[in-house]
Amino acid sequence: MDMTTIFTLLGSLALLMFGMKTLSEGLQKMAGSQLRNVLQKMTANRFMGAFTGMFVTASIQSSTATTLMTVSFVNAGLLTLAQAISIILGAHVGTTVTAWIMSLGMTFEIGAVAYMAAFVGIIMTYMKQHKNLGEFLFGMAFLFLGLGTLLKTGMAMELDKNPDVIAFFQTFDPQSIWTIAVFLLIGTVLTLCVQSSAAIMAITMTLCSIGVLPIELGIILVLGENIGTTITSNIAALNANVSARRTAFSHMFINVVGVFWVLCVLHPFFTMVCHMVGCDVDMLSTNVDYAKTNGSVVLAAFHSAFNVANTFLMIWFVPQIEKIVCKVIKPKVEAEDEEARLSFITMGLMQTPELSILNAKQEIVVFGERCQRMYGLVQELMQTEKGENFNKIFSRIEKYEGITDKMEMEIAGYLNQVSEGRLSLESKTEVQRMLRVVSEMESIGDSCYNLARTISRKRQHSATDFTEKQYEHIQNMMVLNEEALIQMNIVVKYGEQRYVDLNKSYNLEHEINNYRTQLKNQNIIDINAHLYDYQMGVYYMDIIAECEKLGDYVINVIESTGIKEKKATGF
Image (cartoon, rainbow, N blue to C red; front, top):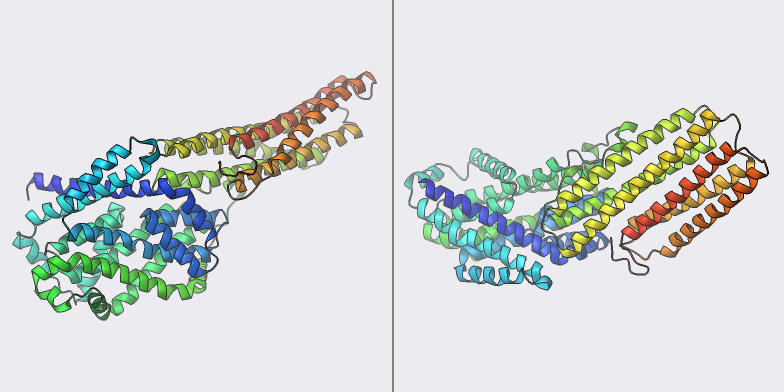
């Protein structure tokens, strides 16, 4: 095999993988947000969850994307582990559509259709309204070009006329346990290395369709690919929280158990699949031309039958699978210092930028909740100004200030990475909104820290104390800020999913502003009346003014989300 042929084959594989990626991205851009909503809501029971996983995966042509979306929803508490397992079971069925698309490319000469799809697709990518559909067609064209006209032709030119290659595969006995173990391992390792079960499936189909690889060994490779594709998600979830690791492990557990039981009944199961598609088992083993004609169809049918049968079998044992997974993957005992660790974007970018936005949204929800906890510490600091725990609480607030700075930098850096990918116009706008949100949330953290520093300065340098009325006014202002933060987090967390009353937030902001103005005027009167000295009035108004600033940052967060009253379709 000369270097030209090697580069042709590698280029064909690259075209195939690029085509699959572009096709999936186009589908996700057309229906990504709607499918996320479907995935979240249509999981009333395990059977509905499996159907939802199958529907979503078949729609976006990516079981990995469906699995990662599911992991994110489990992390956010929107799905239980049991619901996630049922969705993953369905995703295994939905991913079989990809194999049939590849089989179509192997069975028919569709070069002309691929070129036409590329021509129409490239035109549509320049049309704003149909850009996503154009990407889908363009990806489909590259998929078929890489699969049919280049990969299959290139391999056929070299391998089916090479007696050494044919003799090498013929040395393996398909009935040998050793052979099964070797090819199972090869399929697993290749899928893990390439990070694409679709690409290895394409190579397997190609080798079978040109008569080089016996169909019996091809189905073992397919089973290995089913294991290999689950290892990727487990590697990605290594640094994630316990929910992500359990969901990823359940993905691998389901496929490993499925491969084990199907190997125990491999021959009758394979015979049944061949009868389903009207193929003769003996002819597949003895007649090379017959195997070339029907090999890709049999592989696609076996892949589908295995996943459908495994899903139907496993779905009855979802509670038991959940218990096993929870026993194997136990939660880590985390120290308080680990509170700064990000929960959702530690897994890195998802398969496509569109779906990475989901992780960033959930991390922003956590950011808002941490800002609220930090403000709670400020309230506690104010109440324990004379207590022994003052320094301990102040140190925690200082730590939280560092956490908010770190979260802003890491979420913003993640969003900048996401924006470098190919995003729809709506998603680009969404990323800009999210960047503004994290910036305003970091300002809330700074404001909380400024409040703590003012309280600390007053404690250190003043021999006198606030009057009872001053404490009452500060407490009232802090309660208003606390209510504003609660409403902010409701908007950030639920604004996309249900109606949120934004009037509550705006009314609280007006109340905070008016109260600040009232207290400012009253402060001048009280100082002139010698109710307290000027320096105490400065500390007092510094706290009140900072509370008013915090209220402004809160309303800025809400406005940055882009969510409108009675129309929660923005951030």
